[in-house]
Amino acid sequence: MALALVVGFLLGYLGSIPAAGPLAVLLVAAALAGQPRRVLLLAIGGAFAEGLWALAAARGLGWVLEAHPAIDRALRTGGAALVVGMGLALALAPRRVSEAPSSGRATSALLTGFVLVAFNPSFLASWIASCAVLRAYPALAPAVAPGHAVALAVGAAVGVVSWFATLGRLLARYRERLGAWHGHLVRGLGWALVALGLAGLLQHLA
Image: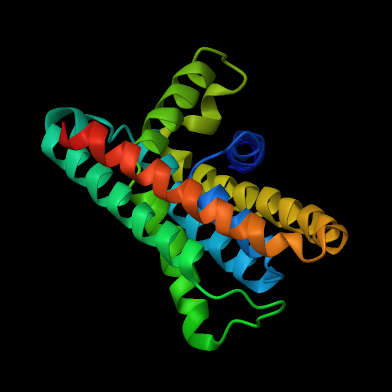
């Protein structure tokens, strides 16, 4: 079990570093807008969903989406539409120098992070691939055994949160140097989300 926790943590942490998807964009925008609590809540929501994908991969549940491509298509289409909405809200909302999220916003941030990852089956594909590679090595194979799937998922979730917390701190330092420009960058990130969402919609509705 300890091995599964460590392997899950490393895969979650290192696998999140090159992430450039909608959740990463929202996290960067929140950090630049001076909302460290929102950064953490978005990360926790996304990490919980990714932990579930890791659990599904270790349990061998990838066949569900393979057998029912309509579910995969519905998830991806719904996720893309949500990304467009998030992007428009971010790009068009009035900017304030500092803003402390309320308790209601806390729930919203957690749900947003969760849905953005839960509606993206590519995370399942990534974890299936990771599990397949690890099973090829006798020393690491026990970490992705079905019996240790929960430990792997917990480790993955903690790893994801740890990386995005690190990223949030780094961006908070740069925010002070950016001065008034951080508001323009946040708007730009919003439009980037809109572009990502529209590209996904065109791909899955074509």
